[in-house]
Length: 306
Image 1 (cartoon, helix red, strand yellow):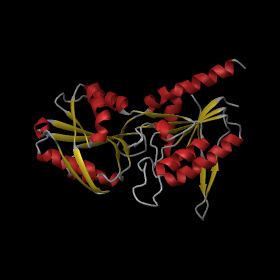
Image 2: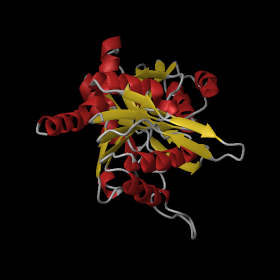
Image 3: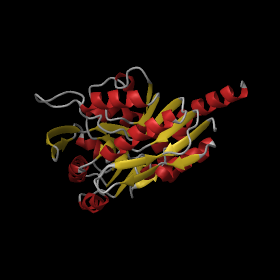
């Protein structure tokens, strides 16, 4: 039996195979069959002692069932350690009940995944009031990696106008916007956002003079409806930004929305490959591989002592 290997849900096969190649590991695709009534049959490859499960959890509901079944089959097949690599981790946004009777999805998801795997690795998890990812997954290992080093490297390789201002959509974005700006040697600021609903927001800037006559680079962790990006782009254009580009860690919006972004004044939208999307331009392969080398090293060390 192989000592360590990677298995992936079909939707993440492209990025998973690149990651496996970087780690010099085998990569098998988990087979999914849908019965006429909607139920799934899940078939995994032979289990390794340590099995890395790769699963971008956009459109998550069927994928979570597939992970549940895959974990059952792998444990029964002899896997001693399961590591979930979910570059996008679903159901993190609701960390409290805002109204009586509402489920706290983050708590439920943390409990579920902690019963299935021994370690969770994700990127730029959408945590609001939760202090860190370990608070979500009690009793197992968990890491919330930053996409900013990979984004900074990709931008630097392509060249960045030194007059560019890096902009976050709200106060929550300030830590990663500051990090990216520092890596690129640029100024940064964050917008003031007032949300009135899922598709209704107001955006303004405390220092419009900072942005007038300069290129703007908007950076966000998740874009789903796209409303914030479009409102912010119009506001930036109105105060004189010479160009507006956007970088997104997790592109959850429909591909057809790119046309609407262009109409709103956004010159380009680029995303990481945390979920497969036509805007993918930045790979997280190196970031994830760095976090997983410890698994590979530990397993190979165990093998040499047998």
